[in-house]
Length: 207
Image (tube, rainbow, N blue to C red; front, side, top):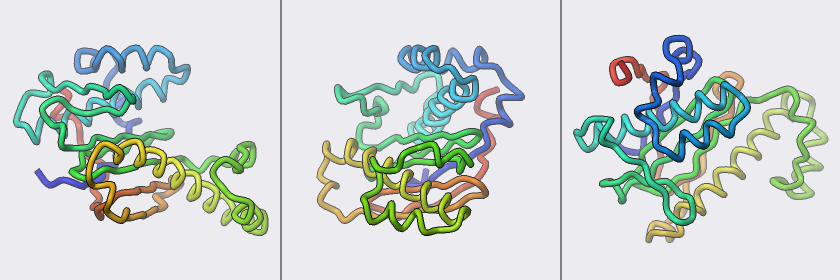
């Protein structure tokens, strides 16, 4: 199995084919509890399918049944996969897109849908004063892209720092990349370049 790939897929396709109950046996106790706390059906589904896909990646790597894969958490809350402590799972979702990876390097991963309601969110917690001034000078479409670019990159750094403090890779210089995928922004913060695969078919694993 090749590592450091970012897997991106449209979760709405699978929500039409399956119900949450169909995935329940594949989910950990904490994930089930997390799903119950979410008000949005889309968020519930994305949380479930994100964990299932991480287990699929682990099952391919370990050559084990997906039912035997366990996702556990450090005291800090950072997830790791039992029997794969040297790999770094990451998942992010927004609206109908879910992105996952199982990387051999620490990684920060975030995807956001570029909503037109972005102006309702105050940018001061992820932008400095100069960046905010620059933001306000842009025309609408450029402003929206810049806003979500900065937001996803901020989230990536937070997630990366949570991951890298537990290993020696923290001494490497991180690699930063962002991509606009239709109306989404995907950002990656890692100490290794990543490759991309789009719209993975989960049917053969879930059925």
